Image (cartoon, rainbow, N blue to C red; front, side, top):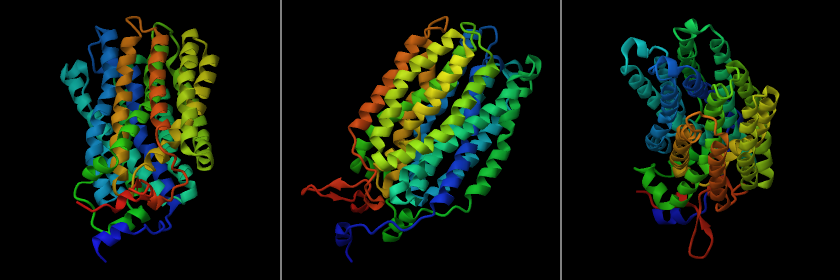
Length: 457
């Protein structure tokens, strides 16, 4: 059969996958991976200003420390190009193993770093280098796990099974916070000397556990089918930008919804425990635990709903709803009332934001063909997430010298919710499209031909 006739053929149905095994591997791996990633956020808000920066200038130290949180997001697009290439050429499983090992090693090394008092300005430099490695790892984790679960899933349940990636991410955030709560309660002389290192040193166990879980995971059926039909393209990025450039831009804009997560996780925590409000660190960490615990239940429910009514309406509920709820949550913090903060945090981050957060793996993944899915998701999301990462630094500037202009921060966050909503509205609905036909492009007659069938480079 000629390459041309093969190009014109309709793709065969997707082979049956192993959705439960893939979902469990994605959930556990993402939980372990993002345990590492999120403990840095808590430490950047509560610990690092006094450990890695000049303690004589606390306001500046806090601002710079929050800035280092965003450094990982700056390197994530670089990691997305590299890991996306590996995933679309060599398979999803290799990326999923590599990301966990890299994250575990870099996080463990943070726990070994000397402090500012010990080596001066070299301390934050080393911290930033380790944070950059974390960012490269995170760039491939969610795209790899989401591609794996989506391609293993039955066609009518892709939303549900791919949501396990983000469900695991929330579990990792809970785990990170639960580890940090007793650490944050230590006396200052213990907390700022050795206590803060414990959560990071535990990452050695994370790396080993993640490797054991994922090393025997099978490659996805549709990727194997595609590889059997022809050799992978030399540069998947070329095909991605040629056939899917509009969807890449759409994912970039939609992925800025992650600003909600970084503001909730880092800036709001810093604001609540600042002198402007004065709430207890441990109490605010428990708000995060409660909100993420509710998210563990809400994410699969929203995802199942998206399998029934579509991805777009569920995502819009989450994105536009978060644009409203950010005002409610930050106002509750400004009152200093713990019950109000707890209720608002659960409603905002646990319920409403979960609608967008839980279904973006299927929403974004269904925009691309098998040939370029991991690259498309990784590059698009990580550029958008880079904006979200540095949003914490911008929020600190917007809040003013006293750090109490929460209205300005809420407006700033809501603007990204609107941007992400507009991006999704302009896209097509894909929840009923067969897996092998995802990423199809219309031909001259108006019919949709699979983008995966274009002539290889």
